[in-house]
Image 1 (spheres, rainbow, N blue to C red):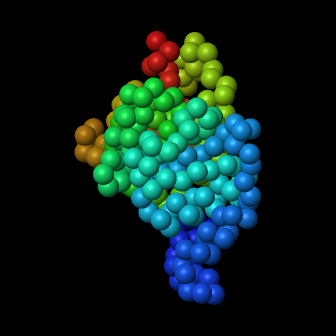
Image 2 (cartoon, rainbow, N blue to C red):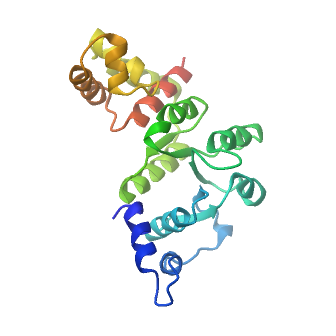
Image 3 (tube, rainbow, N blue to C red):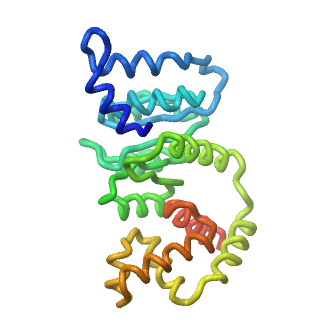
Length: 240
C-alpha cells in the first residue's frame, strides 16, 4: 500500500474513538525504539503535513529503520542531532522555509548528511536543481513505500562507502560512450528536469520519438530513475 492509501484509510476509519491520526500513531509505535547512544543510522523527516509524517514514520519503523519527524525546517534546525549518522528526507514545498532553503541553511552550517527530496510532478526541475546543490536523490509523489525505503537505504550505503572519483568517472564515461548523438542531446535536456513534451519541442522531434530515446538513455546509462541519472552525472562531473 502506498503512503497516500494509508493516509486515506486513516482519515476514513481512524480508531474506535474516532481519532483519524491515532491509528497511525499506534502503528508507528509498534516498531519500538532503540537507544540513541548506539548512533545507528537515522532518517530525519521534515514535512508540514501531519498525516504524511505519521505515515512515513510508520513505514520506516516497519522496515526497522530509526526515524525522527519534524513539522518544519525551523523545528529540525532547533532540535536535530546532526552529529548522528543518517539521511534527511525533506519535502520540497513547505510553508515558511522550503526544503530547498533548508538544504542551503544546512549546507551553511556544515551539515553533511545526505538529502533526499520528496517532490510533486510540477517541482521536478526544482528537485534537479537541489541535486546540483548536493542532494543525493528525489522521489516524485505518489511513491511506493518499498521504493522509498530502498532509496533511503541506498543513500545510507553510499554515504558509508563513497567510491573513488576516478572510478565513478570511468564508469560514467564508458556508459556515455554507448549513446548515439541524438540520445546524448536528449539526455542533456533530461537532466535539467525537462519533460519529454518540452524536449520534443526543443529538439524538433515527436513526443513518441523522445520517449523512445529517453528509454534507451536510461537503459544504457544503467539508471532506474531520473534522479539516478542526475546523480550519476553530477558525481562524474565532481570527479573531473
